[in-house]
Amino acid sequence: MTKDGPAPDPRSSLAPAIRAVASGADLDGTLAEVLAAGVAGLGAAIGAIFLQDPDQPGLQMVAAHGLDEAGAGALRADAQDPASPFATAASTRLATFDREAPTEDGTSFIGAYLPLVTSSGGVEVALGSLGMGWPAPHDLSEIDREVLETIASLTAVTIDRARLASTAAERSEWFQRLAHTDGLTGLANERTVARILELELARAGRQGSEVSLALFDIDDFRATNADGGHVAGDDVLRRVAAVLAESVRLVDTVGRIGGDEFVLVAPGSAGAMVARRILEGIATLPAVAGRTISVSAGVVQFPADGADAESLIAAATATLDRARGEGHGHVAESGAVAEL
Image (cartoon, rainbow, N blue to C red; front, side):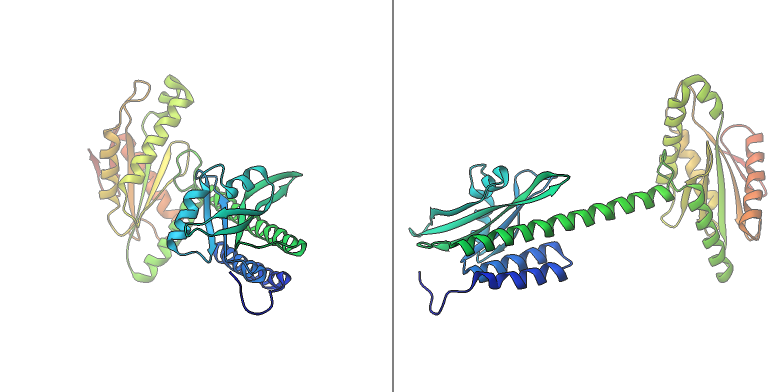
């Protein structure tokens, strides 16, 4: 196959490839632009980039140029063979130039396959491979090879940068989650509950609506810890927390605010109903360390039982004390005590 006009200068691919990396926000889009620039500058007919995904076996195609859907599918399948040039380049970290291979129409093409490698702490890490192909016959000059190696290095840096950014984002999200949740139960922690309560009270004050606050205390929790140790106590806490999380509405917030104390912030007046549903769920839990699991609950409402967070919590604490005074598994509201 011949083309009219002078052959392109392979170095012309570098400027658009660098611009793509400098301005690209989406990894797949950036890699597609880098590959397209390389294919155009080097006068290749086809090109592809494959990556090694830690969560998936084999190589995964992330960019292709000059291939239709069928051709891309065939190349994906071929790359799963450890003997394929893409897989070999990734595993050996060695580049292969001027590799001739037949095509389905009886012709052949010349392929170049390069590993995508970065260095971390002096250790080389293979990320995948890049390949381009030309109709045979085709000879790659020294400049062609240097440009190919530069494109491969640029591709590897782009991938490494994107993965570092992703790791940083995941780590930031993890720290944020730690700052807002209780490590043992996964529920909101005391600081988060306090903030949500303040927000809900402010909203209810503006709208003239109600907010329910319920405090829960595990009955005889110290005895469970004494009989079964802290492992049994942690098991009880996690089981109770799971029931709370499963029993509430989407608009409700549940959290752990003490050793064996939990809280429910429920917009509206349905706090007592939700609290009873929680106690019913806990009543079905199996015994731990030979002891039945039950909780007592105190439910109050804004603004009837308190005009701010501090007074509402004090009212809920007093109501919870009344429930505990009636025995295990009781729910106390501001005006009554109910037994399940």
